[in-house]
Image (cartoon, rainbow, N blue to C red):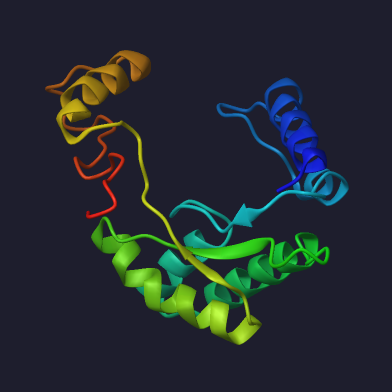
Length: 166
């Protein structure tokens, strides 16, 4: 959102790789609390701190998962509170795969209960639809698997950058 936000983003990315790396780069809440100024945040994909408990809630209807999701949303809303420039934390909706579609109503409920703005996004792991096979090959190479391995990681073909019409 601002130059301060850009600097904070660079610092957070660097810290994620240098001090938070565990299989993947990571940052914790303490670091985000210290360096959130000027940043805009969205709630994230199915594995995020907000969405994952909602996936579990959808499967089990266990209210503990619902409360975990609400707590995560509240924390992010507080951390990315309005600095006088408008909302800085958005609940993210996507419409790609059944698991995401199943939790979208729960995400909308979280947004409504906490008066949070909503943003629709498109999960993108490759640029064009026709790039799916090349991306699939890269995933096999990076994970040390072959394309005929039934247990390997796969991305759905619809996670490419969509046109405005799409």
